[in-house]
Amino acid sequence: MERYIRKTTPNVPNARGYYGEFGGRFVPETIMPALDELTAAYDEALQDPAFHAELAHLQATYVGRPTPLTYAKRLTELLGGARIYLKREDLAHTGAHKINNALGQALLAKRMGKRRVIAETGAGQHGVASATAAALLGLDCHVYMGSVDMARQKPNVFRMRLMGAEVLPVESGSKTLKDAINEAMRDWVTNVRTTFYLLGSALGPHPYPMMVRDFQSVIGMEARQQILAATGQLPDVCVACVGGGSNAIGLFHAFRDDESVELVGVEAGGYGINTDKHAARFANPDVSRVGILHGTRSFVMQDEDGQVRETHSISAGLDYPSVGPEHAYLRSLERAHYTFATDEETMRAFQTLSQYEGIIPALESAHAIAEVIKRAPTMPKDSVLLVNLSGRGDKDLDTVIGLLGSA
Image (tube, rainbow, N blue to C red; front, side, top):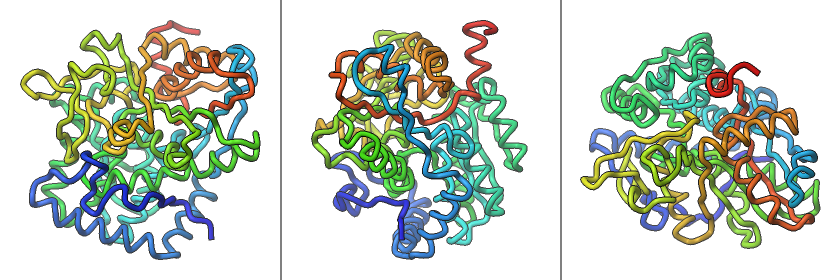
């Protein structure tokens, strides 16, 4: 039986949820029993062939997996270097990779008898995926979303409400993803016995980073098979954008034991890393150092007093001030490398992929394409560059129209 959950490197994380010095659980005592319950339920589900079979069936018949691998012929010719292949998560149901994790966690919630699920969302894609999975499985769904993100992601807000989810605007702080997570966690603390927190990225307290990675590992599992079939070799480089880091860790996980494959994550460079308008957690040690946010230990953008800095990105999904603990761990091992793309570079990449391949990417994904545009021309023509196209750009057209004017 094919399984859609890849479990490798069994000591990562360890039993306490640590990836080296990163990860763990830093939450109120009231939540610890719920995390223990969740860990036990997830471990039990992993041992149950019926759980794997149901998830695999829905992935194939509902999500539309496997998503294809597309050779970007014209972009390859334009850049004149490596052969570029796109892993097409934009073609999954709901338009992004988020459905992989949302569906897996929603099945787990139903298995645990939790009929109410809460979620947070930035770009709206996790909120849409959570609302979708809840509608499919008959669950009550509540989604927290910063009011700033609601304003720039109106189509996704409408889609969530259309599927029966309650979208709860968050007016505190920067009114973006960080604050939506804060409110979701407050809800969970209050309603922990009846509510399942459907966390959207590879962050938060253990077991969430591990669980989200496992559900997203289907991306890399498929891509590995597909790239070998298409080219007869493993990719030389894998590239993905990194906010919290779920799409990237989903791709990287299948290749992390292949030392010949370079893993590259692309953060949001905003107006530039020398400004205070970016979300590049690894790029500037003056503003980002190890800390604790939302229940996990990782790199956090902080001021001199240790207060969380506000961030900026053209994309609503990459402006998170921290990053998943496994990414911090991979960087500490020098197994993965992290760079950034500015808003300006991202907009150019958005237009280039649209015009040369007829594929309109999400602004998050366009950060990865920006790195491809820089990197591919420096690589030999027989090399292979695999990029995760994590989502489609329909949700971002209002933002782009505002910046570019009507097409």
